[in-house]
Length: 324
Image (cartoon, rainbow, N blue to C red; front, side, top):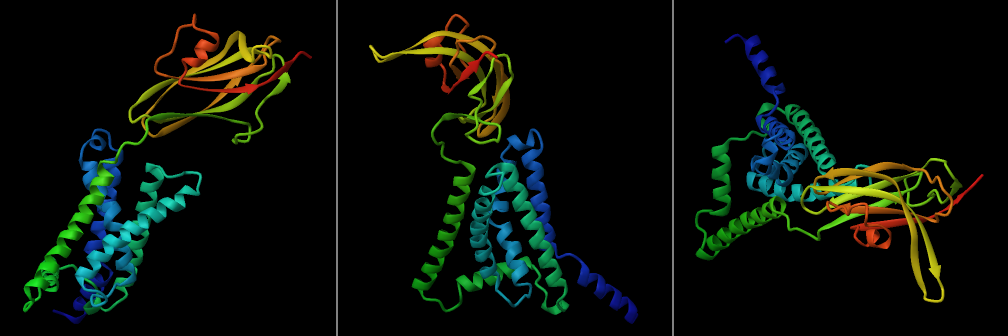
């Protein structure tokens, strides 16, 4: 074979992306597809592809970037560190997302893990191909299995050493299986609906509490579904006149007028924020009641305190609506 052909093939071999890193990127891409592709995302394939992305791949590409040489680590160390670092990296990414506007949700976590995997795979590829071919890490499956077997069950081991090796393997598999089960089948927490209102700056402050009659006012109404099922919510804004009787130490709702109503259907663990605009047209109202109904909405004949009591959540603002 001519020397220039050998040189060309060697150059092509040196810049060819490593197969293990390509597999990590392809697996990540398949996981993203399985999460977002209709029908497929309702099958166990989503969990089967997602678990390695959480438990193994981030740590593996990180180790590949840090230790690109074949003799930097043996394979049992690489595999163990890949699991350990993945279990460490994923919560750290979640912690960082907690301090961003996106929060800890499926979309930002999946995007962050995918970008981390891609970045580390690129870094590992660049570091590995910069080494002489003889020093580059390769993944011969047969040698890996043989090396792991030799490491755990070395010839000449006593029965105690062999038993400890078996216990170690079982412990690692049990830890991986337990973590996978917890992720795939999370324990249900408390079932509840979240309900809040925000002012003009998107904070729990600066609410419209004093304004002229017949002037549009608005707040942001937030509804969060933590019921572990799809729920259709109904939100109402009611103008209320409430008086207090000091003699009996009781409050009475004298009248109530519907200002606005809307419905929203939410999947579990999702939140909707809706800009609700209301106008108080008549004097005599001193309160705006915001009512959240979880699927069951009483008819219009139910009013006053009974309607408030039958809501799933209620919030209110004391107001002064003045004539000008």
